[in-house]
Length: 210
Image (cartoon, rainbow, N blue to C red):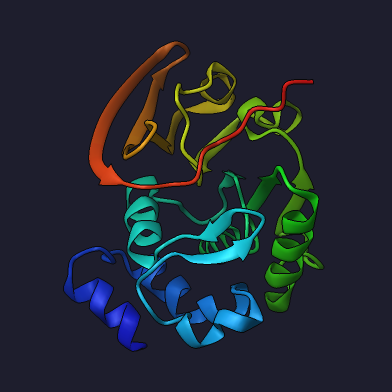
């Protein structure tokens, strides 16, 4: 067990065996820029260029535990950045699952895709990356069992709520300076339950204006 992962377990952020196993297998160092590999095992966000970051491991663990991804599910990962969370989700959902990743910046989409393919997820089609506006989601692939959003929204997009399957879950940061992580469970076609967890900081989720 890596020192960082053990610390996240000891602090109570990593709890679920399948998520712990994914953190062990999918190494964060494979998703950071070369200049910062020496910091990959630190519990801090790291720059990946273009004003974006690979999130703090504690935050990723917290969000994935809330999301509760399961084997065989179809998952949307918005703001995929380095590809680390996409790869974690692809590992958790297994060969029968599929993760669709959306990234706004072309160069980061390529960066994340190349990183995820270090584990064979692109060749096996268990993860599919594309450039796009995350606020619009991916309606042609909906509904999704789970939606993970890695950037902060001022308002929760109705597009994403519509694309969530009944019984599905979404985790999304919401706010401007400091954010709540919001867990949304879709209990009916137009019915939702929400829980908010305060005290986080994310880069913003930006909508394309074209």
